[in-house]
Length: 199
Image: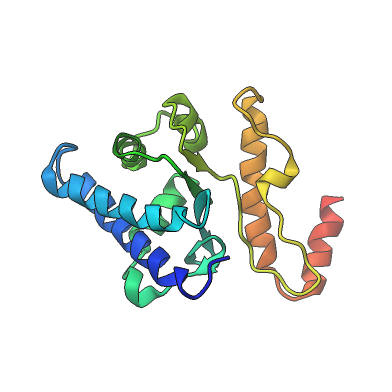
């Protein structure tokens, strides 16, 4: 969770991420405007890296969150483009690790372009294939929970190293998607009915 002083920093970082993705999609990879916006995004991340070894951007109930904390939408501006990219690429969360550099960000944005991924290759697999050491996809999922319920993250389910079989990664991604939907089921009696059908 972010503290109140970190929320504006994270909100500005997300705004800079949106701007840098837009510029990268609009201009060539070497364009000065695209490079400057990537550098602004990385500078915002660096501020957060002073407090965190990694920073996770996720989606919860239609809103973007950083480290499970809602952002200041006046600062971020519209996040529809990022949420649409998350949806089309089946990204539930994107984790940035200390040491992230411009070239890795460029590759990330290239993979996020429409129809950039070959059929059958998931976004998580593409990150591994391109050796993006400071980026992770779908490692954590944040769901809205009531008192007494438990937040489940993919990391708690078991190790998901590059050596694991492809279908395990697909199963974990499907489970994450299910947990997000299940958290929205109302009332609780309907949740019990879903649980009964599962078992």
